[in-house]
Image (cartoon, rainbow, N blue to C red; front, side, top):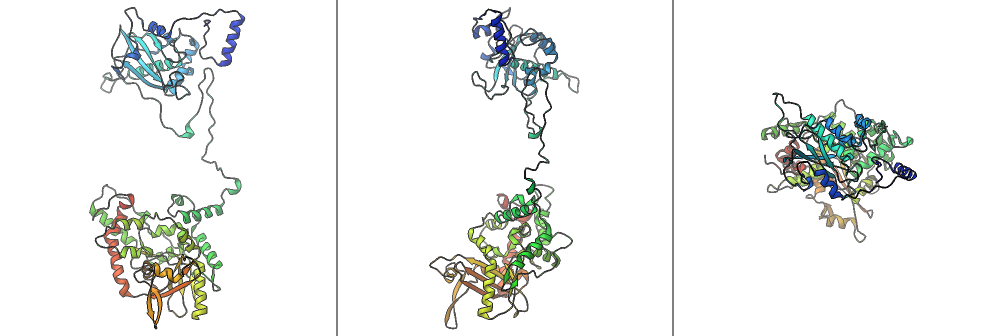
Length: 582
């Protein structure tokens, strides 16, 4: 209002200018032109008035092939006569606010109208605010302005709706002019055939995804040199306190808790495994502390180390071409079945390495791709008319959360073993019965079968060891263990010596589970032991017979050969896709 330039001035500087103007008595000069009058004056030419670009809703294009020859000299001549620009600032143009906006990609849109009015070209632009999401005037995402250029490249006028845009030289207009000059200059090249480009299009914006560590947050300011930002690196930064750094005990505890809670957690692959030595030491420590009738649950095997790692499904290489043919899938499936067969040293290695069972990731690794004893009944009872998809998914995708009852069963295995051995000693009069911890067994003759007994039992009266399967049964206050076993059809009533007693139900999944454990381990007898929460104990010895197991084995092997092995070779069901019929 007093003829003083206030462009690019901060609050303190504006206050100082106002005070000095008052001191010298500078008179106020009011410009009574309305915004519409200012815009109309910019649109006036010697030959007539150009229509307001904001009222033109058609014929806009990104094609700048017919644009005037606008160069840096034209840009310089236009800005040098505007307030806020001088010769020195235009020499150091990269420090200008407009250049900063251009370089940072704030020029969101730049278009040219195909129509020419009185030998003048109309350009319109959209520039995003510097630091705000919306413009203070109109609450819009961009400042939408326009530029009018004569056919010889001279800028007639420019307008921006921002506070400082009425004089036609705000930072947004400057950014748009620099963007226009750069677009036209970049498109002056010729093609490889020597012809001029037929389509001149402004280059894309500078908005690109970048790594957070490569980003620099600065506030553009005129006259200030850009400081080199100090970027803290997180590559070698450890946020833990010094006492927790490299604390292997904490890592081991966390790994054990994670396995117990989410056995299939992805994090298990990045958490360090302390190797077979530490696993064996942990097993020995557990077995030494857990005594059954004074006899510790000691290991029955020796050194767990062998030279090579046995085959797992993670070793399967993908198909070279997709989709594979049916013959390729079938050949790969047969190859997987062959590789699942291990020799005695490999079987012994896996059993030793997995003695912590569900607390160790290798236990899940070697179980995958095999039909384990707990799923024997599920597979053997599958009818020919029933789709195998659900069964296959149950075998490969374990989404069943660990219930409280399951957790209590794991925690009470040692108590069940101790109660059984005490009863053998006091009631049966058998001395020297022991139960030993064990890992995952793989069948020597049918490598696709696996079993993880709860223990290996030795009885002085038997020539070979046997398998032991523990079950911890939830008993209600008004029931007994026998009532629950009958209600859940785990056992059935039988007459024995004119007395009614109970025995294992041969059609129950626990009976099938015990049978597969005997077959896989090669031991011809086993004991099913169930303890109730009220303290009751039931046990039954089962002797392996080929007549009972042979038809079950045929059904299980037929399921593996006909359905399961092809899902291992070319996964579909576990990915939520429909099963192929081979």
